[in-house]
Image 1 (spheres, rainbow, N blue to C red):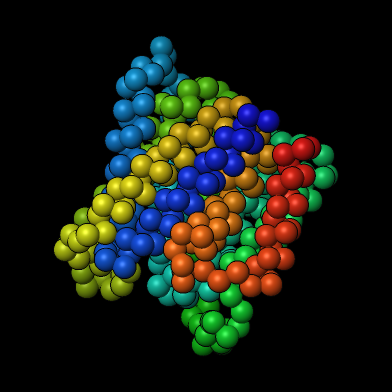
Image 2 (image 1 turned 120 degrees about the horizontal axis):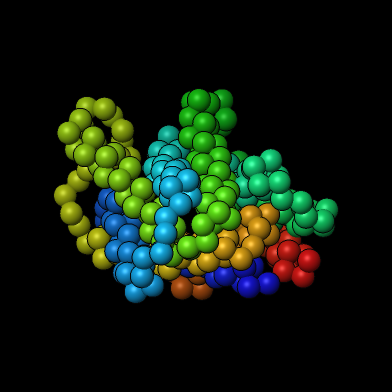
Length: 297
């Protein structure tokens, strides 16, 4: 139960982080959001790692797994997601991105050989369908599918795959080297390295035409990104702690509840950002049913 509670709390903190990023993007750029958020993640989790102290020994394989997980997510997944939004729009990008708990469960089945009762798989499906209904805004809000450059659908799809894979790499590393705080630090350090590389490349080659990744002058969005980094940094710590206790199949779907919490936070505290429709209410009902099944299984 502790792993599921940690995963649920992490999902809420990631939602707080996403909401702050959304507000900050009114003043700044996506690439800056990624870099500042992950930088604060590293500083926060690094401080926690110093307080806990270094592990008595190191497992090179586990360290490599933590680092590889960090390359996939949050860094690469965030960059691909922002690119997907710039090419496809939020309406198309987000439902595809929200498939990541399904990918996490599939990877867990084959990579970690996790086996759970059928009711758990049913709950994961309920959560995924509920998430799709929650983030889908109808045809009127999106451009006709024929007008989209279909190849760009690979961007959110790859981001979802990377997130699902990253969850499993973290768990795999923790199974052989159970040092969650250290693992989270290595994970985020690798993410920061990738984000820094992309930042430098975008700054030196503006003619690449990466649109959403263009670097601009610093703005007032920085403070919001720093707060976002604080929230997601704690979320990353809780994620690693959750995987040190429990299976990916039980934890990942709960962490993926971020969009649900985003809608609630925006609806109650950011009037005008979100509208609760009948379709969304139905999605919330399915989603909560799936959560209840996981929490009680």
